[in-house]
Amino acid sequence: MLLTMQFGWLGYLFLALLFAGLAFVFAKIALQGLSAPQAVLIAGGTMLLLRFTTLDFRGFWHSASQISPEHWVRILLYGALLAAAWITFYLGLQMTNCVAVAPFALLVPVVTYLMTLIIKRSISDIPKLIMWCILTVGVLLMGFGREHKNKTWWIPTILSPILYGLLLFGKKHYPVSGKDTIVACATLLVMCVIALVASFVVKHGDIKKLTVYHVLFAVLAAICLYYAPVCYGMTKGAPYRNVLYFVYSLWILVTILGSRLFHKERLTMVSGGGLGLIVAAIAYHNFFL
Image (tube, rainbow, N blue to C red):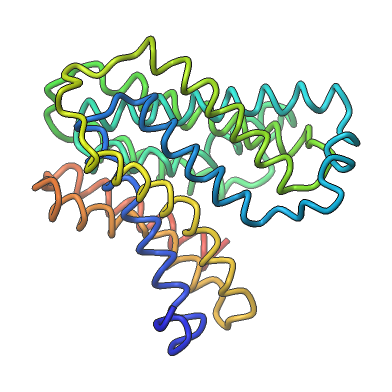
């Protein structure tokens, strides 16, 4: 709070970058003692509580009753996609290095872009397509440019951005009518229920490792994921928007530093080259498109 009061939008940008970069680092710590569904349940519950603090309960039930049955079905579907995307991503984090898995979160907009191309059946913006291709190659190099003890790590890791991309595409083209906060809370509630059920199916290899320490870091990861976009939203009205978004998009650098500090993970030459391609693609997107 003191940081944002003293530096204004610059302080909010720093917090947004820090939160976004450390979220997966903290999640990796939590997954040392929790199963992926358990970690998602704790994270989802934390974010649901944070969402509840923004709800206006005056007319709450009236607003909820205005949502049609068809749109409640959409909420159930979006909640299921959200749960599946989180659980698969956390499974990837549990299987291998954070610096290999975290960059795949950058592929979410690539999925939504490809789905738009499929629907339009035409390519109208070649430079943007090239940029997404460069970004994808960079992410794949960061993921596959190292040895992995678990050879199946890539299956849930690649599946996660596909599921989340489908979720965002659905929300954009098939939105749910109703107050955003109510819809968000309902979606998170569905995610928590699915994660709770999945936690009885997908169990951790050594449940004896579970401690309050792991639960705490699952909560911290959720807080980071929740407040990163909130803090970035507080920079609205600041000058040099393209520069601000470029800096915020480089949260992966904070993740790499955090992984080095907390998990002793290093970049290989190949994954370092992938990082360079990612930075180049993000810079091209912000300053030339």
